[in-house]
Image 1: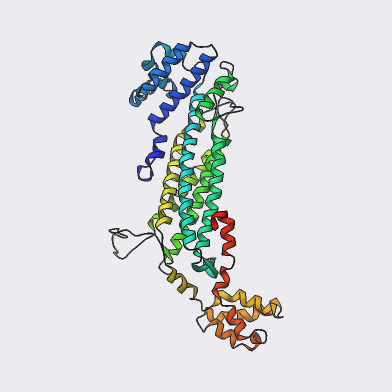
Image 2: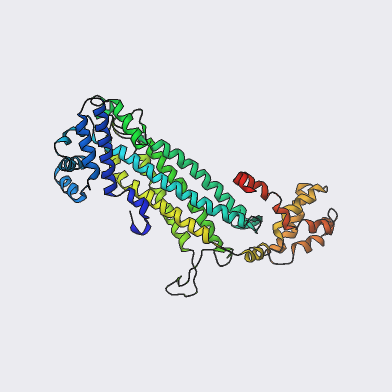
Length: 437
């Protein structure tokens, strides 16, 4: 985890202190379940909970033990025994290390998902507010980066809202799929531990029992989780890229908020750069990069190997921490985005009316011209305007082949910008439902 791109709540989920606390809860819950089954003394289970709950686990001490024994779970259990005393012999009965590690990882990923879902809700709220603010703010829609036809800035933001709503639903499902518990012992057969223990621990930790854990939770679950994060990151980049393009000097229809005292360049005092959106593009690349090793983790040997372990120690914290930071940053960018409707209007007019070419084309076909002839007539008048040689409406009005089909008033009607707003309400109802009112 890079401190520059970490926020406290998410980073805390991956701290050593949090990890060891979850490990203790897994072990203590399992011991309580064993006590209910009469396998360990109830008093021992009570003492383990009482002493362990009050303890502050010494990370440096656990690390020191691990350097000697070369095993992280054994190091923790040794330290726990130092805290609990003789009753510690009843801890980890019939369990294997993966029971602790995998179940803990599930808890951490579920908690991380909850933070990310809250991030998405905040982003959706910002997008919704700005979409309604600019519901009818006309701007040019572009295809291939070239002026196409008018849209509204609100529709642009509504599209982003719909996309991140899909992201939220995908993450809800990914969270459900990742939140499983494995307390099944060596090779996952429950030979030395009753399945009730797994069910008990799962309920206490808000997880579901893994149907077949083979000693590890199958990594297809994790692959889907990190792939979902990658898709969300790609949606972050899509919106960030849009903002970067809109902030270009030649466009300048919107730009990131530039605070008092902020500096854009060490060399050029005039610069106001889209640095936050550019940063988001880079962060998205990193989150996507974590999906591939998660996919490669699916193919483990037989009932268990640990080739996935080193990967997950990195991608678990890094992917969730980075995406958490990115979503929060994007929310701030949208919330404070400076929008320039006058520049949007100016850009709409830059091509001398060419953005209305389709309406003229359709009007000609409705008056009897074949589509091929209509296209020829419209393009014939459009190309000089593209080269800066005149105004589209004027050229059309002076073209006798065009006016054979359309009057000047009919041509002028084709240039009405309001025409492009007629179904904006429909789009908003589709995106926002009852909120659209």
